[in-house]
Image 1 (tube, rainbow, N blue to C red):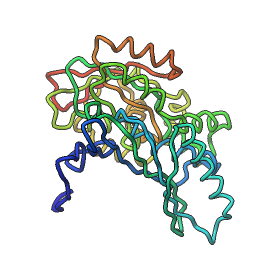
Image 2 (image 1 turned 90 degrees about the vertical axis):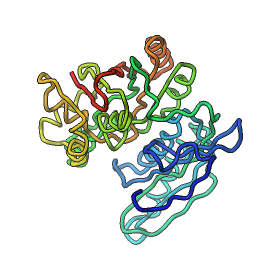
Image 3 (image 1 turned 180 degrees about the horizontal axis):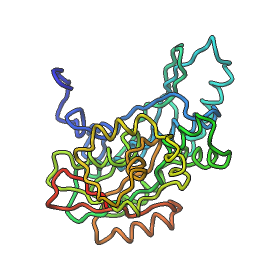
Length: 319
């Protein structure tokens, strides 16, 4: 943060010096802790499912670093004068159920009365210091595997506009509430060099973070990227969230689209995701084995979407 003197020490392995999914602090030669926090306003009407999604989203940063989440604290802003307290109860139950699924214990939290409802978690995870995954350790030729399909931002816009079917609402809600736990536990058995989770910056925004100030570039096959099929229908209707245009404006200078890449596909690649999948950068020799293990392990939408390339430093080439 420009102009600010940030406290630090030699045990900070990942901190404010670079953009990453979470902070990492070395406790000993055998243990480091991962710390992250995330909360947001409701993106679905059902309070129970909102609690699940918010919790899954907050836990995801620990999985992206290769760690195991252990403890969490609730963060709540609630309009007590305008909403029944039963709504908050359902949100908390949703979050607790997701924490239980993750094997995480709730150790506290903080709530404030606010005009706008918000919920999320502060999460602490464990990892061995030598196994920390960051966004920036790419190797030439590495393959990129994405574990969840894109499109939640566009579809959530359709949901807010009352234009999405009950079927697609249920599908997307369950997708966002799904933990990245299985994918994270599988990938640690393979030579993964870098990892991140796809959230508000969209796929291309998070790819840009991975190659910023890097000697490498990334090539993406747009036809291989898993996308929720209804996404294109809603995008064609103009239901692309403002965040997608902000993501494009911020990062389009790093992206080279082939003429064959339709504008709708471009919009989806910039679409801000909520509780998206992991983007795993793995040695090319074992990419197929990791992909098979993910699919066999229940992470069925996992797909190889591209590779790390030399000669295009700091660029994302989309074909």
